[in-house]
Image 1 (cartoon, rainbow, N blue to C red):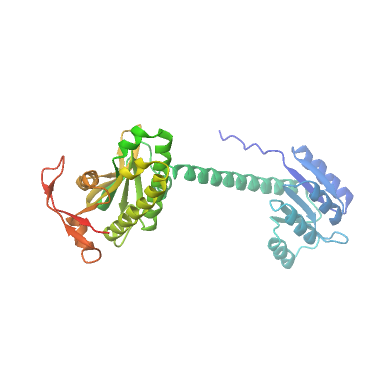
Image 2 (cartoon, helix red, strand yellow):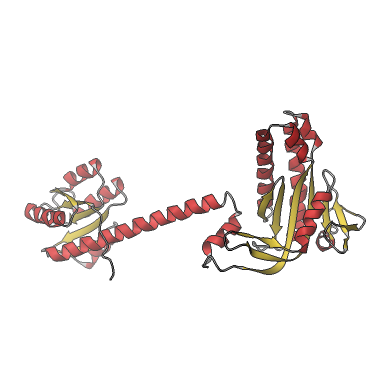
Length: 358
């Protein structure tokens, strides 16, 4: 059995110079659970609207002095959310068109049939409630999106909020992705010698800088891991030149880190003993939901994720290391120095790497 929708009490203003029509309308609508006031001229109606906003105005078109349409225009300026029903004993196409243009929801011919008026009021107020519910839903969705974007990138937030899936379903696939790791070298020194609140404040400044630069190069900030940041280029946001953008972002991040380091060094000399290393690699990766049924993370997994992370952890301060898969796209577009092949922890094969010279 479908439960009948419970209409909440609404404020209605009946505007009609025919006192009997106005009073009968008020009596009928009051019995349906609404708060109803009457005005017998346009000027009186405007005065009442100045005192209190109404959800619905039922307006006679042929008011003396200020006519009904003019009256409703002023009421809408005072209370933009007010809906309107226009009453007229001389309805024609031109009047109906004008009423719609001025914001009336409906029109009704006189002499009034109270049952039809009641149905029209019910329909109009139901539309009002639905519109308010939709507005509330949009506000809640915006609040949820804003909250999620404090923890996830805007791209990942959009994917998670826009897709239709049950909690037991996972989404993802394998694609070519460029991954960048930016790792603060010797950060443990700060944690040992500075108040943790100061170290946290520095990390906040650092991550703010990294996030802004990644976004400016059309990348996606995947996550923060302790004192490191991980970013993706080419997915989930499509990108024409992900490798070049990743390297460009890395160079800019190194410059930004140097500025930030000098600023914080004014507070403590320990900040001059840290540095930033960046590793970049590209290859096939699984991009999508990773985790358990209780908790999922939308991220990437793959050998090149591990390679980029290992490179960042093996850099010296200020160094940017890239692999062959990145080098092929950026050769000739920035200054590059070939390094010796390295055996990285956890990998069976050695990796040819290059360093980007600022």
